[in-house]
Length: 218
Image (cartoon, rainbow, N blue to C red; front, top):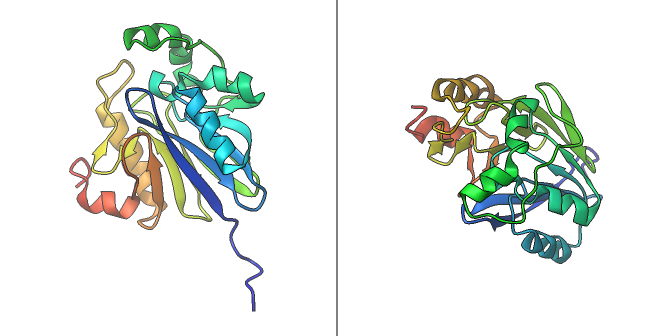
């Protein structure tokens, strides 16, 4: 017998980009092969090569927040694929307005200031193929950081809010450590210990693993 209520399956490929080795994530719905690129921070030719290799059709770009290593390639990729950019929260508009300036500070050329086609806020949803993600506004690392959560698959994209064994830095303009910890405690931990996540840098983890072992949360 087959389970007629089988969950839609998700595929993912992580493309480390920029000198910061940021996890640009290519995410797709296995049923439709429709895909989204999350946080294209740079190295757009590498991202395009990964898209070609997987054979999926990218229809959107999603941004978790506005820092240069997550958005530096967004405008170029939008033009190359003729797709829309969604996110982050409008509180990070000041970062997207100064992408060129931020890039210059880190020797990143060819980046452009841009505006997304739509901002995200708490309670919104985004979809790709048969996959739907709820939006959580999780400020602290940046004022406009958002997290994408697929409750059916027990999976999240958390950007730089939470890491395996660490949390996002809060010494950058607009960062606040107490606000970040509150975002994690009030919004991410209640998702459940079985929720796995991809973060902005390094290996992924799960909410349960971080609740038990992350020194910033224990």
